[in-house]
Structures are given as structure tokens and as C-alpha cells.
Length: 332
Image (cartoon, rainbow, N blue to C red; front, side, top):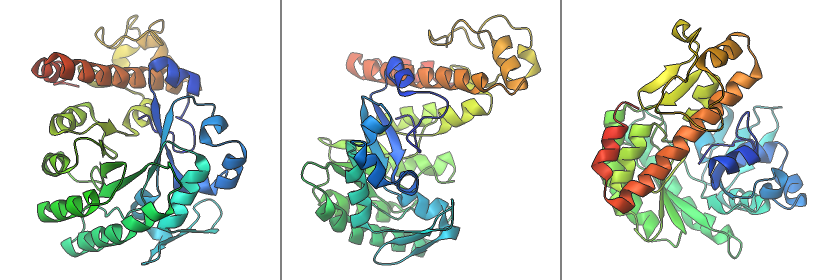
């Protein structure tokens, strides 16, 4: 899922995403409830019409902001009270309100409001976050409108016993799908992989399994091998705005001097039709001149790279060529 936090994947439009072959994107309940507001989006007929997007939409509940905006919020049994980062106004998100707002958006997948603990945190903090997430889970489900698909989120930090407990608690409830939350929050990769490897098989195979916030190509490949189906991450778009292109040889800083007069692409094995007419030298020039087109072209390239990665994953699973795919992306 490309990340469109504010109902936009930065620098590109819905037609670009459709042309790249994406059919599902992510937006954010917290940010959109502050601006432009759930009521306005509802009057427009929902988020799909508001942003002229014909695919599906998943919205994060605001649980990630419980962690990322911890300086501006107060957590209680009832919910989380935010002080808006825009104007200081108050936003009180309860599980019921988070689901109600996502219902106003008319999205295809609503995420349950949870508590995402940071890394590092103590075991006690991880337990408190997990327990509150568990107590909120039935409230999320009870607030859903008929036909509103809600995914539950497994927490537990880096602790195997807590992850097992959380998976058992959440999968006992009738969520439409399940997510592994609380990873990619600052922990090293060598701590992330065991969490994914342990938790993914504990989730029902007949429902979608979603790893939140993970997006490095090799991390995606590892998670798919564990049984994960869905991913989102800001990496391809954020890194594009910081002059970086994803290739089979790894990330490339196109602003480096080596590309100043390079007529071809940065990687002959990662050439995509949406940007193939533009040379590495031209892209470098755009960034050096602070031209917005540079970020747009880099974003299109990176999302095309990720779209190809996901397509090749699906093909490799169907064809039984998984080892060859792992080898193909070993430097990415």
C-alpha cells in the first residue's frame, strides 16, 4: 500500500497510482479527522470520491499517533486525548469514535484503535499497551456499521510470550483481518524478524495478514516467507523526496556527483515506462535546482519498483520460484 496519509500520496495523483497498478492505498484517521474532517469527507460521498481514487482504501486508526505524538496526547482507559499539532485544538479518539470516523470516510478496511508502544520500552510498558489494546478490541467491533470491515492489531513488543498472548486474544474475536503492529518503530532488523516469524503463523490463514509500517524490500520478502500478505510504508515515497531511488543494487542517491553527466538510468535492471525517458543526469539536475519534478519522478520510479516487487512476489509464489526471487533482490 502506498501511503497517502493526508488523502494524497505525495507528489502524485490517483491516476498515477492506477497506472502503476496499485489497487489499495493507506490513509490516516487522525490526520484526516483534523483536516478536512470526517463530516466534510462524508458530505463528498466518502474518501474515494474526495480524492478521486477508484481503488480500495485502508485507514490507520490513529494508534500509531499514540506513539509518534506522545508529547501531545493523554492516554486513558476510555481513549486517547490529542492536542492537535495544527492549532492546539483537542481531539478525543475512543475506539468507538475512531471506527465512526472511518465509517464516515467510507473506506474498505478500518483499523481498530490500539496502543502502539515505542522501542525501546520496558516489558511493563509493552504489557500495558497490549492489555489496553485488548480491552479496546471489542469496543472497536461493536462500533462498526453493518458491512464495515475492521482489522484487529496484535501487539506485545519484542516479547514472544506477549505476542503469543496477543495473537490468541485478538484472533478469538471476529475481526475481518489481522495486523502485526508495533514493529518498525525503531528496533533493529535482527529484533524485528523474530517477531514477524513468530507472530504471522499465529494468525488465521483464511484472513488477510498485515504487517504495519514495514517496507524495505528484503524485509517484505522475509515477511512474505512468514505468511504476511499486506504491507505499507513511507519509505519509497519519503526516500524519493530525499533524492534516493530503489534499484536491484540497493538505494542510490541520484544527487551524487557520479550522475552529473550520466545519460542512462541509474540501474539498467530497474527501468520503468513512467520515467524511462528521463536520464539520471536530468534527475540529478532537478534535485540540485530544487525543482518539484525531481521528487515526482523519483516517487514514480520508487513506486514502480515496489509494484514490480509485489508482482514478482505473487508470480514466484504461484510458480514455485521463491529462491530465485530472493537471490534477485538480495542487494535491494
